[in-house]
View (cartoon, helix red, strand yellow):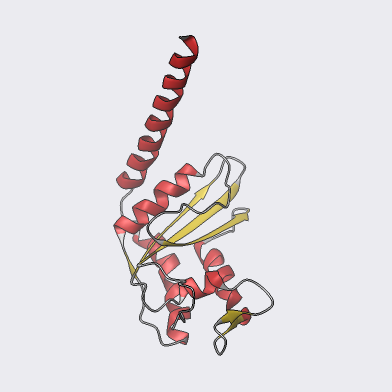
Length: 168
C-alpha cells in the first residue's frame, strides 16, 4: 500500500512539475528582443539561398520554452519528439547567445552538398532545418541549466528535413 501511494505521489509531482513549467512558458510575454536575436541570423542564412524569411510565432516559442524548462535539470541534448522541426544547442559561459547557437547551426553549411542533397564529411542537418523552404514560423528559447550550461532550442513550423527532399 505504501509503495502504491509513493508511486501515485511521484506521478502527481511529475504532472505538477510539467504544468508549472508549461504555465511559466505560456506566461512569458513575447520577448521581441530575444525573438529578433534568433530571427536575424536565421533570416540572413535563408536570404543567402533565396528562401523567404521566418516569422516569430508565440505559440511555437511557448512550446520551445516549455521544453527548455523541462531540460533545466540535466541540460540533455535530447530532442522533444514534438510536432515541430527542431534544432538544439548548448554552450557554456555568459557569452553563449542566441546568435551563437544559430551561427553554430549555420556553420554546418560547409558540409551540405546541394548537388547530392547530402552531408559531406560532417553534420549538416541543423543547417538544412534553418534554411528549409517550407518552414514559415520560428519559436526559440534559451535557458541556463542547473549545471550552468545554456540550453537553446529553436522550433520550426512546419517542420523540415524530410528524407529525399531538398531544403531549398
